[in-house]
Length: 155
Image 1 (tube, rainbow, N blue to C red):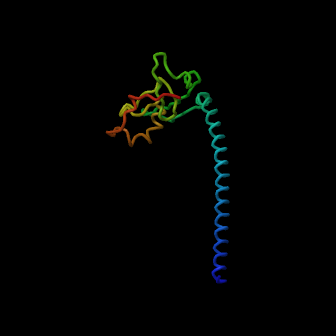
Image 2 (cartoon, rainbow, N blue to C red; image 1 turned 30 degrees about the vertical axis):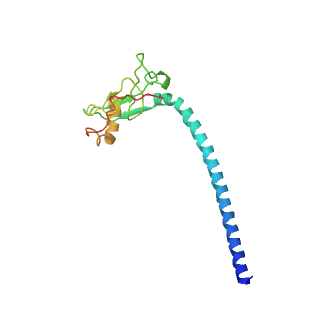
Image 3 (cartoon, rainbow, N blue to C red; image 1 turned 45 degrees about the horizontal axis):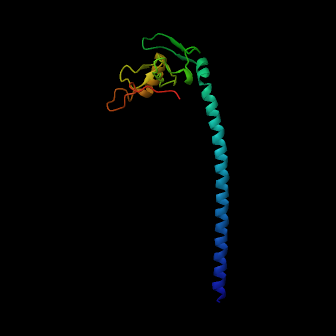
């Protein structure tokens, strides 16, 4: 056998071994990264589940203030604990689901639809004004789904 050919085979064998070692290392690192991501995901899911139980209480203590309404008058909207509905208590006696405010995500039977298009729901005039910048470009456009016919249900 030619010594040059033998040296070439050994060199190719070394390259193959290095590639396999590199692939094994990458696979091991990827496995460890996935394990870290799974652990972090589980931690975040637990936090989300526990925070969902306290959303009603947090919303009860949140104050939303707007400097003036459409008439130029000063307004102040405050949410109180008796007005906040938890997911367990958000359905009325007749079985209808409470609509959700498109600005603050509060489920309430006192929500009202956008007077112009009816596609968005608001629990207060302050939320309607605060959401206006986002909603104005789509308000009144044809061929968009009407949400006033489909109230959202809290889960």
